[in-house]
Each structure stands twice: as C-alpha cells, then as structure tokens.
Amino acid sequence: MPLSDRDRELLAFEASWQRHGGAKEEAIRTELDLTPARYYQLLGRLIESADALAHDPLLVKRLRRLRDARRDTRAARVGGVG
Image (cartoon, rainbow, N blue to C red):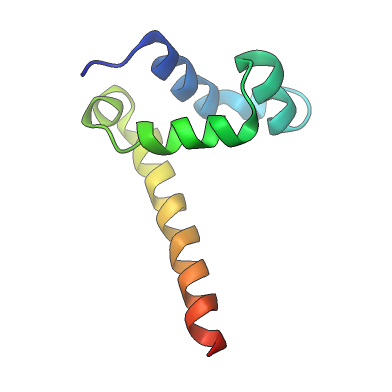
C-alpha cells in the first residue's frame, strides 16, 4: 500500500523535528494533533513498511536501529535481573 499523506507527514516530522523549538512531545501535539503515544505507535508501524523504506531509507533504517537497540537494552536488563 502506498504511503498516505499522513504517513509522509509523520516521516517528515521525524526527520526534521530537531529544527522545531521546544520539546518533541509538545511539537507532536501542536503540529500533528496527536498524543505522543499515538505518534510513536503509528511511527512504529510505519517504519516496518517497504513503502516507508523506499520513501526515506536512511531515516527508516536509523529508526529501526534505534528501536532494535532499545529492545536489546530492555531484554538485557530483564534477562540480567534473574
């Protein structure tokens, strides 16, 4: 399924949010009219799509690496407790 305008908007925001003044969560609310939780949920699904990868491969690969690193860190913490 091709990317929707909203999908492209989410990727563009994620690629450039540092240029916005203030906290990212506030920018998500004001610019995208989403809660941060919903934004991250949508973004997480979006970066799994081949269309998103084709649209902005550097961004999507970076986001996937960050997600995987966070997951690995959580797994190591949970696994090291017992």
